[in-house]
Figure 1 (cartoon, rainbow, N blue to C red):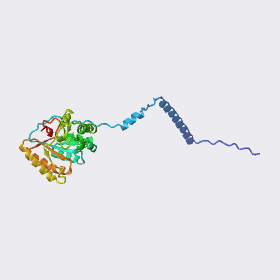
Figure 2 (tube, rainbow, N blue to C red):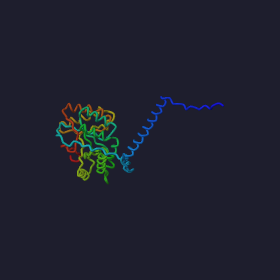
Figure 3 (cartoon, rainbow, N blue to C red):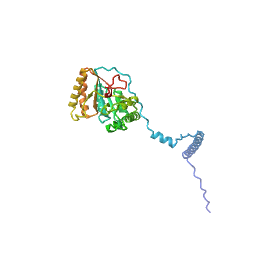
Figure 4 (cartoon, rainbow, N blue to C red):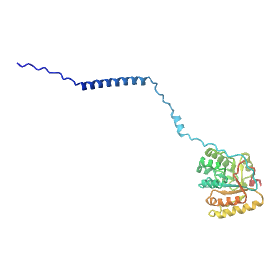
Length: 284
């Protein structure tokens, strides 16, 4: 009978055995590290999230900051017979930035009378740039409609000036009591004129009409009209208050008007509420 062969168990080679030992040690280390890290995280206090109410969130997103209040310089300058006030009515218009740029180039301030219904055409930054350059801003009613402003029963003049002042304060951050009556204060009744003053408004008319509204396509005629009247008033030793409008032909005429008046020794000012010179048709 043949003897059964006993199978010998295969022996692991030393290199393989070493690898298995290292693999086991690595697994043990990783397991230990994971356990320690979990315990450490568990000990840390959980971060608390800020709870913001829906109402507060909506308010934060939708609330608009009101424009910062813009202060107009209040210190009055002396007025002489060689002082000229350039004034522009019926704005803000699409030409406003070009007017301001030209005035800054010439280093000349002016006064702008805005219509309340046109204030949606201007941003607070533009108004701030006007005032920063030395110009001033006043109001020219809400509608510029003479049929409403000066009608015999319930004229809207004072109410519109108050509304324009309020709109300018809310939209532009400007507080100004300076006004110009559309077509001039001649149309105001005596009681309405007095009430306007009682409400704290400063009313300014003019003594030179540029007729830029008449000479719509001719800047040359505008220049001639202004300088002819300026020469007449120079003999009377009066400051000049020039009525103009924010129009293209006026913009084109303005450099020649400024240069001619400078050559004749005039200095330019922006009209302010406390300027020590008053001009009102109602008080002449």
